[in-house]
Length: 309
Image (tube, rainbow, N blue to C red; front, side, top):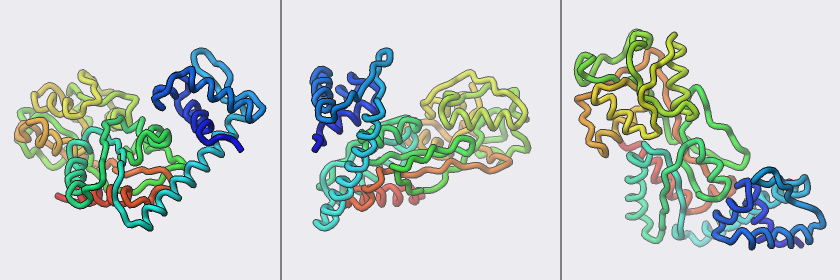
């Protein structure tokens, strides 16, 4: 019988790409991880890792072990969920990660609900790029992640992940109020191409939001002149408020900017797009953990907060 502890070490190396990264994630010394994996190789009777540059590559035998280890861990997680369900206890620690606008809007209220209704539950919260969320979830860095899907680049579905939709967040064009017709602005713009001469503030092109923004402009027939690029969406809204750029953003970012960044909504004109579009916001958990009481409570709190006007 192979050691589950050593199998989990191998799984961490597979997830992180190197012994050093796995050791950091586990809070262990790299030499200790290497030693344990050597013992596992002796138990298996086969080489498990091959050096590739500064990293390592799993052998075919190692890939089989990692796949089986994932199945075992899912079953153990499901067993933990069932035991907690029988005990009817919402407690312990749950680790969540979310993108910026969710952390500024729905997450604080959800945590306040949980603190009131489930005082024995500890929630550890982390900001994460949407693109990194599911890999971190599968690496067991977090128990739940909030993710966003944009029309031009939906998230990749993984068989080890279960998602639950919270709802849709409208995507819109924002311009400086001074350049438009007042704070509320017209309800729509006849054609995004009318803004082709604007300077733009956008998220990086390798993000889902940045890819969608550029795709919308190109679909309208022009290449946007991106003068401000940042993953900090509140910064992008601030540049628009100062009259330095226009942007394509979700409405939730305007709520976050008004509530948490001191940006006066009167300085921004908000326009609906001629062809309405939304990003879809979901919670994602590892398959097998859906019945865990603390996960159920967390999802319920997030859903209630998202539905609150």
